[in-house]
Length: 148
Image (cartoon, rainbow, N blue to C red; front, side):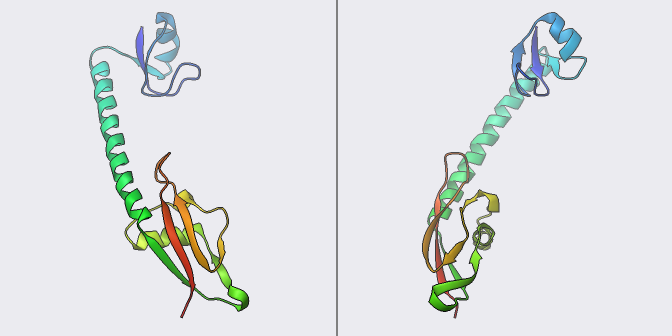
């Protein structure tokens, strides 16, 4: 019997997948526990439509991410900070600071997507990667300069 999984089922598949299973397994286990619905008639057509709409959404998100990646890679952020003796900063530049600065430029980025291993604590110019999508991580240029 063909079923469409409505929840993730261990060793069978993820939610939204179409699977061929034994009739008894479907009737006695999957369907009564609302883990799957029979893939017949309206449910099958709805599943096909859902697959198509997910693919469109994924494609649209990819295009938007590529545009954001272009904007990020062409951006240079100048961070003015207070500096003590020897070029040491008072405080540091964190991933949150970089995400906020990008946000002020109209590029909304989650601070967890900014690939900064350690906060920036010295003056200079740095390249910081921003993970937009898996496999797509443009680098923003961050220039740390003394304020005033």
